[in-house]
Image 1 (tube, rainbow over the protein chains, first blue to last red):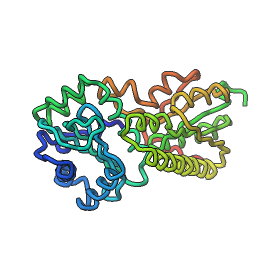
Image 2: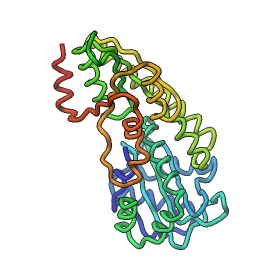
Image 3: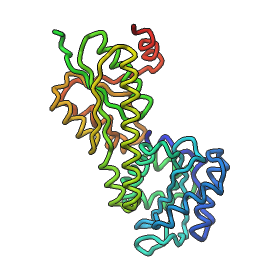
Image 4: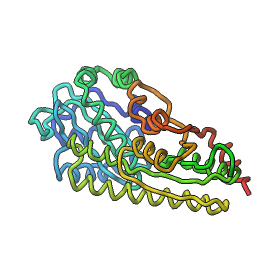
Amino acid sequence: MALLDLIEEEIVKVPLAAASKSSAVKELIGVLKDAGRIGDEDKVYQAVMKREDLGSTGLERGIAVPHAKTDQVKTLTIAIGVSPGGVEFNAMDGGLSRLFFLILAPPDQSGPHIEALADIARITRSDAFCRLIGAAKSAKEVVEIFRED
Amino acid sequence: MDGPIKKLLVYIDGTEQSVTAAQYAICLSKLTGAELRALYVVNTRALNDLLKARIFIESEQAEYQRDLHADAERYLNHVKSLARGKGVVIETESRNGTPYVEIKSVVTEQEIDLLIIGELSHIRSRRDEFFNEAERAMRFSPCSVLIVKDEEKVWNMFDQLV
């Protein structure tokens, strides 16, 4: 499944209001709850934070890719958030995280989960792409940037 | 058999499209007498990329690799069972690596005449063209490639195969 197949306006939040790691994760989970994509929000939050406890998924250049396996989704699920002010996410370069990709997969769908994460790893190598997404003012704009890339 | 197609390879990646491709391949093998093989590639390249990008930690990489091997076994067993049900002999193999590279290797090593793959995702951005493994396999395959479409038609054909 191509990453693009998963990206729709209703799972993109611009701007994120959160000012902390836990609230950013909760806000992204809330986006998925509102879109009817997940079951129990608390269980999803616990799964994501359990993974974060092993090591932050805050990468370099303002990207964060929190992810988890959870039985609270039926299929591979993604939420995207843009925080213009940035959030302290314990990123590896010590900087603030501005672009968030939350990826959730059912325990029996590791293949698509890995493909989606690998897609994100590839696209976030592009400084230009990250700058464009980071400067997006609306969910619609984010979706258009992905489709035009 | 004397026809131009003596050895078929179907690529299984865990998608519904690849299982449909397997059903088509079983029909083709039954009707032509061509030998049939199925290949699943555990994408260890992607796992390594994720570790390098620090999206994965080492224990996570190992866990996902185990999951993918289990997926490979499950899907190949499923395809074996489909073939057995139609009285077709199928050899299955799983490999580690970059899918299109391993597919190309198997095609060359096993002297495959026809590679059969599932329907490709719609190209919705330029990036998809560069990174879709099935599309890469199609482009890099040294033998002819058949892309199986129309799941319902294939299912009916498979169902009616005696």
